[in-house]
Image 1 (cartoon, rainbow, N blue to C red):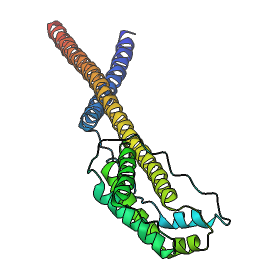
Image 2: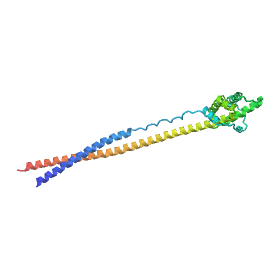
Image 3: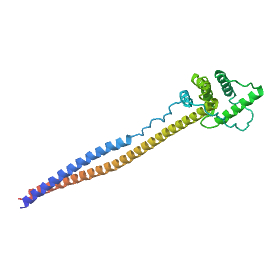
Image 4: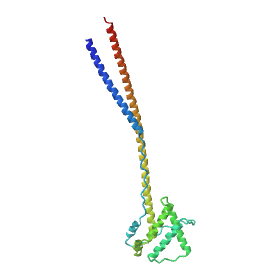
Length: 268
């Protein structure tokens, strides 16, 4: 009966040791896997988002101006010139561009066969200064500035020399031309600048959002690495405890065998 009990005890001890060995193996595999995950998560670096794109370049279209003028099938009432700005101190700013505009308007009048009233130098200088002051006033808008002045000068002179516009004016299908062209360019320019500003702001927002998302992703990766390191430490500690248990069990088994050998030697 004692022998049978001993055999059953040894069988259960063997089964328990096998279970412990399997658990140790799983712990060791967990340590290795978690260590690899720690290295992988720690190696992650934020990916810099694509740089903010510049808005596509777009210019004021002469074709659109032609279409706008061609829609005026019937002669329209004379367009009043914008209110003159308050008198400003004489200035030479934009004088070159305004002089060109003035000459382009005179050339347009000749091309349509209009009778141009002779003006003395003082009157012509006054008209030129009024136009220059108006252009300078328009240019104070942050969306415009010097670039707008150069653009509106080039565009207006090109439009005043355009055969289609000259023909429409000759046939009296359109009324005043000079100020409608200026206002059309100004309004279209402002629309384009607003679109550019909105596009570039959206791009800056996109870059900020993507950069923030990358920072959150890396922070999560760092947290995962810390959690994996903690789990790896627990698995390794469990492995060492099981190893110590097996070592103590082996010592106990050896001591039992030595004790049995000594008892057997003492028997007559």
